[in-house]
Length: 161
Image 1 (cartoon, rainbow, N blue to C red):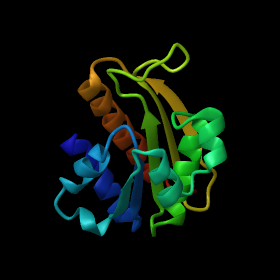
Image 2 (image 1 turned 180 degrees about the horizontal axis):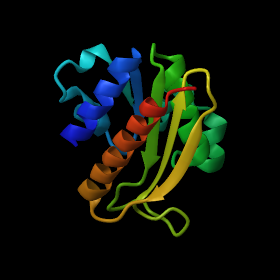
Image 3 (image 1 turned 30 degrees about the vertical axis):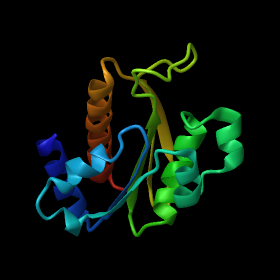
Image 4 (image 1 turned 135 degrees about the horizontal axis):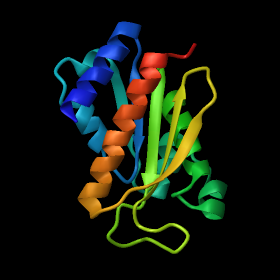
């Protein structure tokens, strides 16, 4: 994780970009990974740990109607979270994660390990993916952090061109 976060930081720094994070199921673990890198204040603007629905609405502007109709673990919520992270920061790039790390909370439709991840460069359209990670709570969260760092590094490398 350290090497991934350091690589991401180097790419963001070389572009002069800032990063924002909106985390639910990871509880700030992505922010921990990036702030483990010395000098990350040069490229990490802020992180939002919005574990509750109220926090998602208050801090990121996720709509109540979205949470009521499709739930916190959904494409729509992830997209609203990432948009809110950009609106409420100075970042050029943001990622949002919302999912079910387990061991409880899963359903047939959304089993444990289901995570929606959305990302966006400022001024560009957002994108998202639904992933299913396997393992216990810690394994799921670790995989989400790793996936997110890899996705962010890819975006920082490609830029918003």
